[in-house]
Image (cartoon, rainbow, N blue to C red; front, top):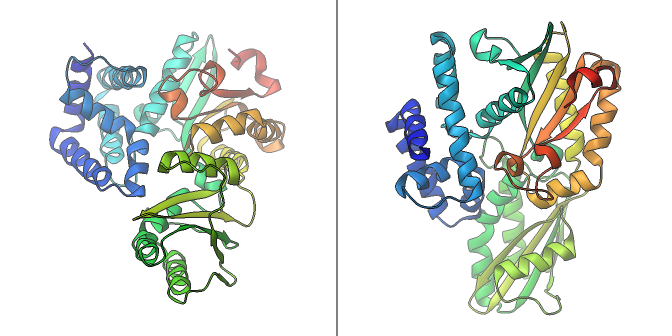
Length: 385
């Protein structure tokens, strides 16, 4: 049954387009770069479907079973829609299989629709059926509400983006290996980036290229420090008591040492090890970025004719950061602050979910109840579940 769902889903995507997308992703992952490792996590849905189709009959893990179930929701939605809506749905799927996109946003919308159905609401895919600015309409009795499903990147709340960091780390790795071969030992290169570091559509920026040039010049000059308005660089011996030999073990220790906001990489050459730890000049504020997206969605995608619900999917985060956002109540403070603001007078509830919830992980990795949800007190009775 599960294999049939996957096959039907690939047929809707188009076998040629699907095969080309999977081949491109697998080639990126096989390169062994940091960007490739990130792609393995970011495109877990696509690569997971491909693996399940290649290995029929294999026992599936919980995340794979959830991916399989979500493909079934897509196929069922396609069959239930009108012809024009079906064409829009398939166009959205085609877009999700192009560079810069993933299936997560589309599957998030399907999951949100399913959750409201499970709680007794009638659900319509208004975005596909009527080309409405919002995605879903739910009804209970004679009452209705609009739902916007959207994706916000945690990188929007970081001065040093993870994507940009991965590009830089891959770019400087050959230079670090060359330097280590001539200077065997254990070193730590600390970087503070007051102006941040960003990528544009997955591509390097001029700022990133200039930073690479600074790092290379510092290494070639045998200097142990360099600084300007964009970067403060310092190269010191790596002093970490009982450091693990493996890269994974070393990174875990460094994470405890430098905290969750540091960007880390390890370069090994011969018997030498060079760790790079980079961070912005100020703390990340992912929760504020989520609140900004709530404001944008309220202005641009809700009609204002009734209560609206904003269901965002937080991308480019990991379980440790997601737990910290919940445990430290930073997302709760921003969400509740937004809901009591004048601009949210027509917003009945907001929610946030990540891949942890999408893949059905259990608490504490995922939020209790399958999402982090907050309801506007004015709509609490009608929209709570």
